[in-house]
Amino acid sequence: MDERRRAPRITVNDEFALLGSDITEYASNLSSGGLFLRCESTVPLGTELELNFSILLDDIEEIKGRGVVVHLGTSDEPGLGIRFIALTEKSLALLTALED
Image 1 (cartoon, rainbow, N blue to C red):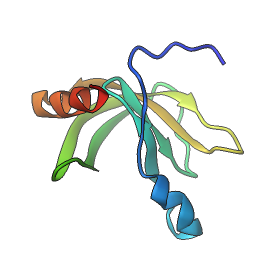
Image 2: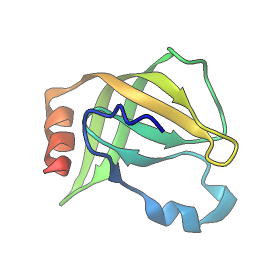
Image 3: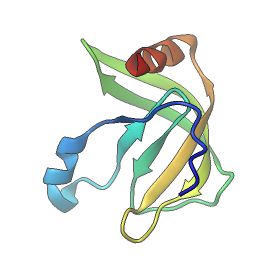
């Protein structure tokens, strides 16, 4: 696979893989540049999305912004690759801190 990522990916929510089919959507990795959202539903490439999700650091922190779908998953790993196009200052700072 061609490696075009600008920032390292951080694996998140591994525990959801153990919960079975009750969980249908979750972020499997993210960085300050984007995330991969594991889900069954698909939307067309180029679709812009409002994003509002939580991550667990020392406390539960909220990430807010906009993203664009840049990758569609496969049958083995269904989901959406989303590149962030606008994040709040706080959200960007939190995600950047994860990479350090």
